[in-house]
Image (cartoon, rainbow, N blue to C red):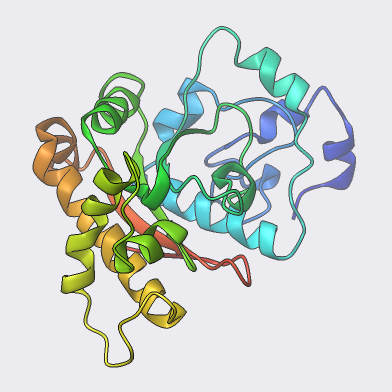
Length: 242
């Protein structure tokens, strides 16, 4: 565990930010962990493997669930990131107000790129953003984050038609047919909605690999990982999967 006196010393808090290999300064053994103050540095980020990034995201969610979140000094993080940013991940999540990725994964300023769109679907603009995040800025993980009780998924199941929303929901529709489910396949059945939401994450990952040669190449080379996860609206838990 961290030395409490060390944490109280503002001059030393910066050392805690994703300090890979500095076990004396970590709350989870030798794994990189989040600190109170400084934003993630290029040196620290580059030392992390994609698996370590995923582990740090999972540990952040554990802190969120247990209500033991890091006391982020956002002003300090703002100052330390003003001349450069070195996020370790890029998140594609839903616009749902109950799923703010930085909060549910206990991240700070400069930790992650975040794209949000209803139903966490991909398009050319989002793919371009992800390519920038990974190929240019050096992020190690692409995370597609879906969630339970998703209104966009529910709307797709109900075949809602409304302006531009219709086009967006059409992107989710293939996941409905692909979902294996023995119960009632209706929008009112949240078990079915959740099953389709997970399928939608899986299919979005497939679309990312299919439509972005850049990201697919980086993944084959082992430089990044593209993974999925589901956030449970009820208990706050994020379940990761490949």
